[in-house]
Structures are given as structure tokens and as C-alpha cells.
Length: 238
Image 1: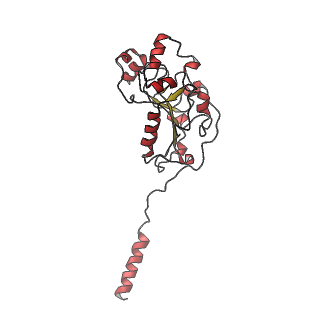
Image 2: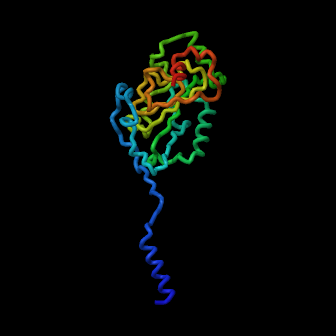
Image 3: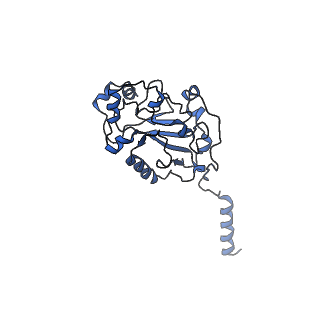
């Protein structure tokens, strides 16, 4: 056997005994969330990651793809309310640079929806972030009244990928003013179904531990009057 033949035989032996290793294949969903039945407020109140989140859309090798509903195109506020354009643009631009953001909704693990903080349109024009609170102090009303909610829940339910029960949706309610304001906690006593709620203040019976998320207020500190708010007490204990 020549030297060349011996070298060839050695290479063949090495190739036979060396396993073919590669990075795990990326597994992504390839369809939109299936249409499911709506869920009651009782079911929504008991939501946890094991019974309300669809893990099948988030494989370990998926890279955690996230879809953002364009806040300029998918407005879920009632007539007369809107979210500050600066907040919409900032969120869209910031997440646009994130490696997890995908443009194809069929590939998404979770769906982000900007739902607040919504202000009265005339307050946005005056750039008055605290006008709504001043009106509430002058004309107090029960926070449970439906018209007091700046979010049109039917618009939320009609989002194209809501899937009937809102699973894998994350509702971003980013506070910019006093956390005691009813409009800051706009989702209080609203049926968010299986969607995860992310905001700065919750009532004790509203927050779902291990499911909902508490985040700091944005663009400014909490006012000193907020210390008397029950939701702030809960936030501090958490």
C-alpha cells in the first residue's frame, strides 16, 4: 500500500467515525393562532402559564419571535381617546431594532399590543398629561362604569390574530402619569381573556401572579400624591 493510499484510508476512517454535528434547526410555527371560543372573566382570572399560554408556538429553538401590532394601524381606544404619538413612535422604533421582532405573524410566539396609557385627545393637543386626573377629582365617578374605560374592548377582541381568546397576546399599558388615575388602570374589571397584562399598577384582585407583569412608569417619576393609592401599595409590596 502506498503512502497516498494509506492517507486516503485514514481520512475515510475518520469521516466514518465522526458524527455530523450542526446547530439545532429553527422550528417556527407556520400558521396563525386557531380560532378558539371566548373565555369568561372567571376563567381569565385563573390564568397561569400552564393553562392560558400556547407553548406550541414557542419552541426552544424558535428564538422567541415577537410580533408587534403597529400602534398607528391598530388603535383599540374609544372615540375621543388616543395614545401619545411620541409613545407610539418610540415603541415602534425601539422594538424595530430588536432581533426577536418578526414581520410575519404566522411565525410569532407572542403578539404585543399597545393599549395605553390613553388620554383624551384634547389633552394630547394641549400636551397636558395630568388633565384627566384633574377632571376625575372634580367629577368623581365609579371606576367600574364601562364608559370610564378608554379602551374599546371589542376592538381588542377584533384584532386579526386575537384567536378568539387572546392567548399569547401581551397588552402593554405603559403609564405616564399618576398611577391612581382610573385611566392608568384602564383594564380594571375588563375581560382580557387569556392575554397577559403588562402595566404599572394593579388592584389586588386584578393581578394574576406568575402571569401578569408589573413594570415601572415611563417618562417621569411617580407623583408624591400617588403614595396614597392602594395599587401603589400593592406595587411596593411586590
